[in-house]
Length: 214
Image (cartoon, rainbow, N blue to C red; front, side, top):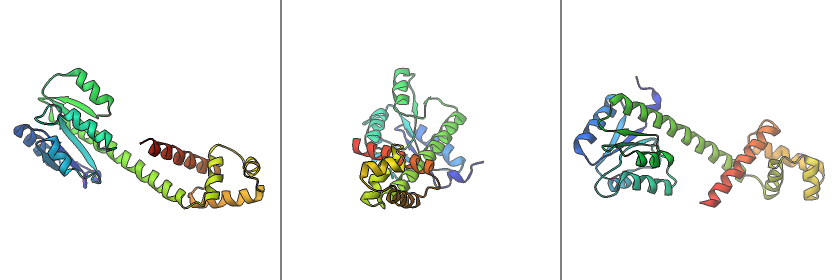
């Protein structure tokens, strides 16, 4: 029985063998999931909608762009779609390479239906987690962007674990002024205590560093 998590997910099936592609599509649809079939990596890139939750079932060796090349392109684009690789060749070094780059699983043909479904389910759960995390970070960044430039200065010092008196000394302000700023920051960041606020501000710092490195 599929739960509501699967209602709006799409399983992209990228496989140049017509029979295998059809079999996977039938399997996926039999458990109530939607699928989009593509006979090449190039076709997938034309049809892929980054906003749609789901996962990618991807053949390693195909005419044109290989599955491994497609994985590299998606990583470069910052795409979060989890990938389940399928292959007709027992190519273990290749499997290791794809797994190191974050593939969910690597399955040899002929595969057992249950093994593929289990991997697809794991991939969907992973996708949901990473989307939820992205949503949380986006909300944090939105809240942070509402801080005034002075509040951001104070926030940065709070994230370093400094207490109000130290912040006051650093910014040549009175501790009372810092307390007012702290209260405003806490409210804008949706935090109920100092520890939670510090945690959120550290996450903002980490997310900012990451985006600057891209």
